[in-house]
Length: 74
Image (cartoon, rainbow, N blue to C red; front, side):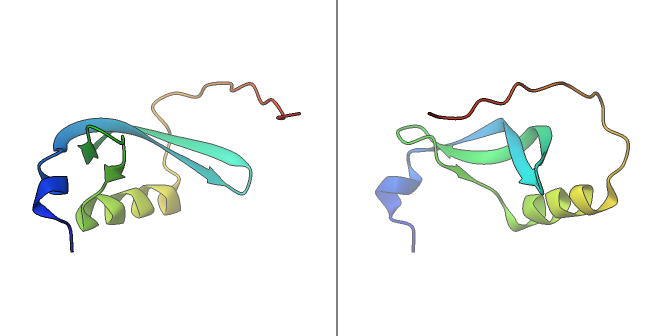
């Protein structure tokens, strides 16, 4: 159960959701989330999670495609 005090630190925001699917990055912008202002933790509603899963499964044409540099921590 979420404590009342922790719940007061949540704000509604639009966030960028990043998923690594078998080495391919998938980025979804403007995802509704509740964000803890102290920790940055993002909480998604069950409907939002279901919608994200559906988007990933359908692999529809993206809004745009970007190149991402990859570095290895050494």
